[in-house]
Length: 439
Image 1 (tube, rainbow, N blue to C red):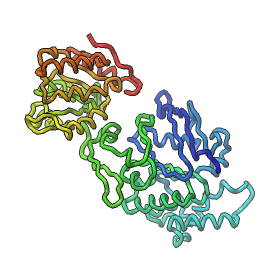
Image 2 (cartoon, helix red, strand yellow):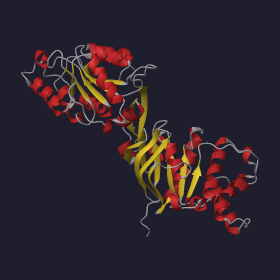
Image 3 (cartoon, rainbow, N blue to C red):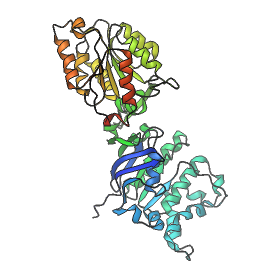
Image 4 (cartoon, rainbow, N blue to C red):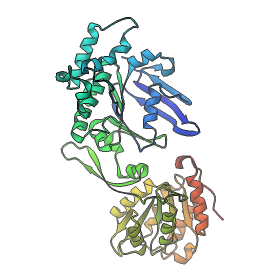
């Protein structure tokens, strides 16, 4: 049995001029897998597919198809190994559907051969798998949008390549045709006929039909695994900047996400426009000036954990900032802290305001500790923690532990903005070392 994967990428880097589109992507796709490639617009999905097809030059790294380096394969051999279904393809001539599907057989013919018996059988199988046998004699332009996309699939299947690349193939289809198209592709993968790699925008469809979801963000692979592990509120907030609720479909056990709102829309032309989320920890009004400043600068924001009637909670509501909320005057409970953990986990930077700390909200400092060293953490130093510690010294100890672990201390809004702008200007949070105190 051949142990080579269908596709292997190692350190794949692709640039458009000076702009990086893919950055050191490693990926292994096993034979017979159906994998979704997800990510926001501009994350690198189509670039990855076009690089695998050999349509884009690779600046660094390696692409291997069924154990052979892509660069070593002649064009005809590539076409025998990889078939492609693009987002949309406009047919120019009203050719018979069967003739259109037969275009996929050209990779298997030499320059002088005509149609062979094997070609006819491949076309018939492809039409049957795509549910288009009865339309074989009709003109391609007479087909509906959904049928035409299935015709493109049939042409790719007639190519008889073991790897099938789909570039957002359902983006122009209604929900019924989306379910039909992806169901057919999934059946082919489960029957062992093809390995499928599909760039998809709809995470819920990806969860329903694929074995695995790989998420790209800013040209990097940031998540990879089964849909049940990958689809999360934290992922949607961190990568797409969207607050969502995760639920489980009771009959199938498949997870799905219900989007609720976009995190704080960026101010056009602002210094931090669209960057974040920046999670602000506050209380008793201490976070309000920071929230308003960062909102004006265009940053995407979250805040927590706050009691419902707290003035910072009211500011967050006015500005449309997602927040973790506890009941009025109550200690921070496990549900509110779990919600706060989701927001903290999605943050690209954390700002701890100079809030008064008592026994009921001391967990706000404790919950930040695991993120120091993973993302930039900024600590407000004025007024000093000793002047707002109502815990008998435990708050001061927690604050000092954050500072000693590498959090950046700021004393003025100018210092905070300088630190955040520096963080936002780096290639990625995961690459940034933590800075020293800002004085």
